[in-house]
Image (cartoon, rainbow over all chains, first blue to last red; front, side, top):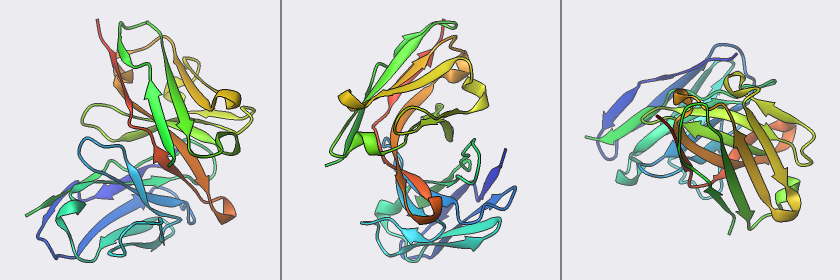
Amino acid sequence: DIQMTQSPYSLSAAVGDRVTITCRSSQTISNYLNWYQQKPGQAPKVLIYGISTLQSGVPSRFSGSGSGTDFTLTISSLQPEDVATYFCQQNSGAPPYTFGQGTKLEIK
Amino acid sequence: EMQLVESGGGLVQPGGSLRLSCAASGFTFSSHWMGWVRQAPRKGLEWVGSIRQDGGDIQYVDSVKGRFTISRDNAKNSLYLQMNSLRDEDTAVYYCARVQVAAANVWWFDPWGQGALVTVSS
């Protein structure tokens, strides 16, 4: 199975800060990498799919990048409504389609 | 508006059974793979399984194989998760989600239901 490792586990940043969350896969996963946002008490929702394609309706301050085994989710200017836990997910090839353990983002 | 609504969660004893349902609306249900994802209390997300549009291809995570069964009824726009031989570690919120596909087999889950809590405890 492909393991997904996110870092950091938790993060505190100020409004307006640039925030970066990383995700590393245990094997090369091509472009089969998605990012989800889960706000407290809510279901997850997709932010980015295929490494870097922004889901319709998602603010442009969110972006994704990376290749091979190393991937990044960036928030260019943190807003209060971005408080959430962020998960990466790989769906390369055969199942299981694993998620990272999550990164909890808070406002400083 | 696309919507997924889960039902059927609850408290069940270890070794017991439970069936979750997911009612879909606002999109052509029969045109999409569908999936189940669970989240144990204060834990991360775990893909449970997925089912093809016609039900002819079903995939499961190893930890539920032989105990859980995913099915669908396209005439009723509904997805199901039959859970047997439940264990303490199956306690989680179970989400159903639609699979959305782009070019080159890139896919993701969107939207997700609000989740159904399953508690396995004596």
